[in-house]
Length: 328
Image 1 (cartoon, rainbow, N blue to C red):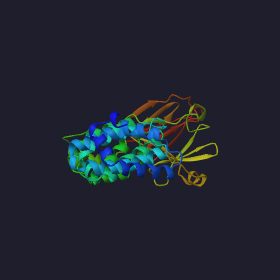
Image 2 (cartoon, one colour; image 1 turned 120 degrees about the horizontal axis):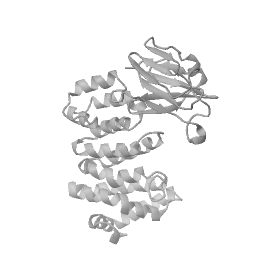
Image 3 (spheres, one colour; image 1 turned 180 degrees about the vertical axis):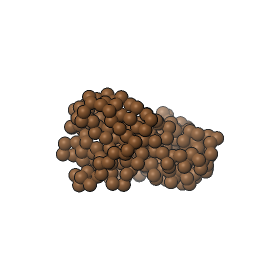
Image 4 (spheres, rainbow, N blue to C red; image 1 turned 135 degrees about the vertical axis):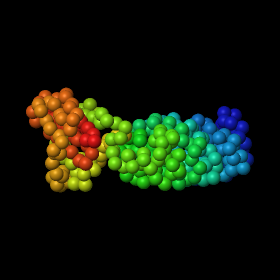
């Protein structure tokens, strides 16, 4: 293995061989199915670049960082979350490509940094419709400006929201407000703007930057969420939509960056209001929102509309998708 990895990593492994071997033996007892070949591949492919980056940024810390990362890698491989056979390659990429971008911060707090990045990648991977590749690229872009663990936590949440984790919206906006203004603006791709103004616009308009809205959902037979065409009502709090498809019920949260579906109850659907704002009018298959007019791609008749404070949801018995349109 030592001949295949960098001199920096090879030297650390050689100098602490007994310690590393002891940790590996303990991990095999904890995880009987631990594949040591997969672990070796992960060390070479994903941990080695991280070690090299820290050795360059803070050589005096590379030993302690390597030890912490080695222990975490054993757990992740033991759970089958990383390595050549992992179902989702995102976490491998986090260690191989993203974590080295945070080498100075990683040198100060390896467990916290690797834990945050790994947990974020795992969570984003569980959200249908989220865009992990976007999150990775945008995190790498702001990495040089992140100097504290608290900033990493906040910017990671902001960029997860921007990558499609729509239910993060309120928390991400609050987190963004804790960042230095220049870093917050960089996270939103708006350097040079005025942060209080951008923040106020984001808070007031969930569809800021996306005037076209989005379409969400598909037939379960095609890999979608809905077995029957969905029915939609605005939630009591006015922030999302209660959805019914057959005997199943959901909560749909959507904004400019994405849409996320959570489980809900029949009672929550039954209690949801079914009001339509006066600014919205249907004329056959034509939808009028204030001065805007949109021709819907469904047959006229039986088109249903629900609206919360910012979003209009359009459904039809002929379609398994929900059309989501900004009201503002």
